Every structure is written in structure tokens, then in C-alpha cells.
Length: 368
Image (cartoon, rainbow, N blue to C red; front, side, top):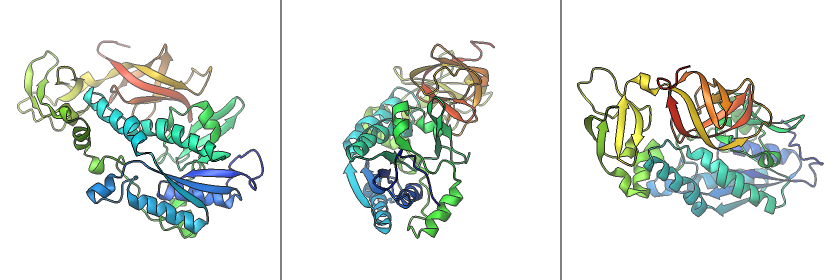
């Protein structure tokens, strides 16, 4: 299989830097880059070696992954370098993750990582190495349209990662390449087997790399011990219904773990009052949101405002919205919308941009 990396000049004499995590996706990207005839340099960032600390080797930043990346690079006959970015990752991703939980928000560290370490630090590193582009294993499509480079959803809906890349700027998009955007995951694994790559059947990581087993609370407590302070669980009128063992155990929309017996109807977390260390609960209907105000908006589609939809969670279906003055207004009440999450705007399959949700307006307070 041959891939056009759109280098703007013949591959011979060009240089491609590939971000190699040690997984099957980035390994296949490295192989496709090597087949193009360009000089290829594989780069792995040492971000957070939690795997070594807990004896777990399937997190994306564990030592095993660095070894796998090097093994693949050796197989392909390309250069491979490991750079220590643990400090930058801790400051821009882990600390922010903990601080967001402390504020009662729902953080998305993968977006922060792409926004800072990967598409800022790593992209700068690729430029310093004299590369014509930086290629990654993300399942998104980069399309050169009549008005410039566009970002589109991956062709495989089950693997699409465009939600996590909404903060990619137009300048970064010009330099980035996503060779897997048109491919389904089974074909990528088949390519890896045909190429004899040791990672062909390596399982995909299901966790955030620095959150082993999905235990967010333990990670936040380690970084911010005060996050485990107890507080009250109250209803919307402020009546105390119970106690909790730390805000880090709760996010908006959560039902499990409240341990509130004897209630007339199921209760959900509808708001977190971080200043008072209170978890506010209510019926499911109270979770319905009509609009949300966004901050740090990144826009990739100048002049595009019609036919918009928004995703407020990576696995959510896009919901029809109207974008106005930094806020999105849902055509129908939307559930699962919480401060700290990203709202990513689409026009069909094209990513127009997005921003961070700062506050929401309940549907019961803002009728259609």
C-alpha cells in the first residue's frame, strides 16, 4: 500500500517525522512513511512511566511501549529517538487534569495532550529536525479544500478521533499528516501483520495513559491530596441528603456511588459546588441542557455557520446546534453536558472547531 504524504516535492530527498507511541497505529504510519521513499525519523516521547511504577506494561507511556517503538523502527530501518517530556507533560496535562477535578469540572486530558505536548512541543521538534511534515496515527482525515486545509472525521466511525483534535490550529494542520484517516482498524492490523511488525496484535490501550485501570480519584488524590476532603450531598434546595468522601469521585451526570437510600426517584449529580465541597443532585430531567458557553474557541472554518452540529462527548452523536456569540444552543435538550468538557463543532464530516464548556443553561430555565 502506497500513501501520498503530500510533501509538496519528491519523496526522495524529503524527511518525515513520525510520532511513534509503540502501538500498532503509529507503527503502521512509520512503515507507510518508509515506503514513500522519504527519509523517516521515528520519535517517541517519554511522558509518564506509570507502567513501571505499578508493574503494568499496557499504558501508552510505559517502558514496554518505548521498546516496541524501537523494535519497529529497527525492523523498518529508520532512525528512532526518545525524548524526555515528562516535566512538560506533568505541567500541561496531569496538573491540569487534577486542577479541573478540584474545580468540579470534567477534564479531557487527551485533548490537552494533543493541544500542548504533541502538536506544540513535538511539532516544534519535528521542525527542528528539518522534517517536511509530522505524521501521526490519529484516525482523522486532512483534506486540502478550495480555501485551505480542512480537518474531517475519520472514515471509520468506530475509530474517529476528531473530537480530541478540535484545538488543532490551521497552521499546525498544514504541517500534520494522518495517513490512517481513510482506513478501518482491521485493515491497519492486517497491514502490520503483512509487514511483520511485532505490534500487529498488540491490544489498544483502553485507559488514559497516566490513569491505570480508570482510577481517576487515586491519581488526583496523589497530585492534590486535598481533593479527598469530605463534604455534603445536597438536593437542589440545599437540603443535606448525605455525605461524600471527596469531589474527585463525582462528575456531572453520574448516578452510581451516591449511596443515597430511600429516595422517591433516581438521583443524578447535576452540579458540583467546588468552593463549598458540595455535590448537588437531582432528577434526570435536571440534566437536560439547552445551551452552553464556550471558552478558548478554536475555529477552522471561517464564514461557516450553517448546518452545524456539536459533540459534547467523544462517543456522543452530533446534535444540531446554533452557534452564536461564543455559545452553542441545542435544537433539542442535550444530556451529559458538563463544564470542563469540549464541545466540538461539525458541518457534516468537517471539523469547524470547538471550545471548552464553561457553563451550561438548563433546559428548564431556557425553554425552546
